[in-house]
Image (tube, rainbow, N blue to C red):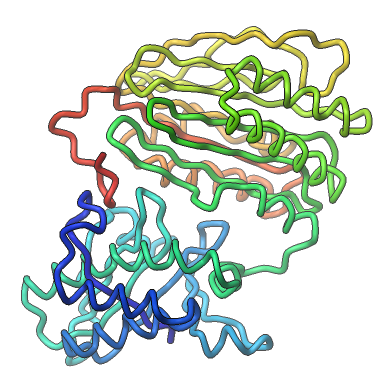
Length: 413
């Protein structure tokens, strides 16, 4: 059993205004080693609320399985963690609703499950068995789960325990490289937008990546698909992603970011190339801009209609004939949903997947659920064995007018 919990201010309040009991928990967790901080907060949960059983379940890297692990098991390399299919489970309900759920199968105790989510990124579920909990106790458990997300985000920088817990299948060296290129979070939620992404690697692992970053006034997004398979494509993707990040972090404009990404492949790509798109969305709603390096057109859902966004296509990054990349503006309005994807979402057996229809069918879903549904459809169409990586990004644009909007999962700005 992996133990966990704590208590923090209401979602949206960050870690300020923390109640005294929580302050003690966070301090104890901070003083503990990263691999034992979960035990510290779980012990506090038992002492404060009389919890008889506390556990934590991760969402695995593919977002299709819940993994219950313990620090004891994590230290024993030969033992596997308990795995529970996510689809149709009570854990699925908790993650989809992002609300505490009371289940009736706890015997003499009440089984309580709360989402462990940080700024829209679902990390897992806190599961607690409590004797006759009142409303105040339930609220404190919910807040505890929110605090646990902060602890996990901090602790996973210092230990492999959480990486171990989230892996339900072995990883090749190429897949390891590719996974480490991705952002540590798969989703992000703020007042102006909600974003989520997913990557399903092919059996022999190709070179897809995605990236995002948020600064004071701009949301930065990118999606790329490096030529080739196996470790060669992963090494190309490494050059590609880090060149793009280097330019972005140096404050380069979008055209310069594209130029430096392109030049890096010319210098180090060994006659290879990569398609991709770089996007920047101004948080004040003034404009949305994009560089399209030979990549499939984005899909936009607006008022129930899905359309491709027709863009001028420059050559892929790394093709010597390409000159300066065009920075194109596109129409993005409050209420729009934008989906970007790599060709693995529509090639080979995945050609049968109707992305526009699925987008219309999932209009009311959170982007996190949209990408899960889209990638699951591709996996099912391919019989679970992809010939090419399949990557999808979903952005809901709420617009700059944030009055009265309450973002969920602690994402208020």
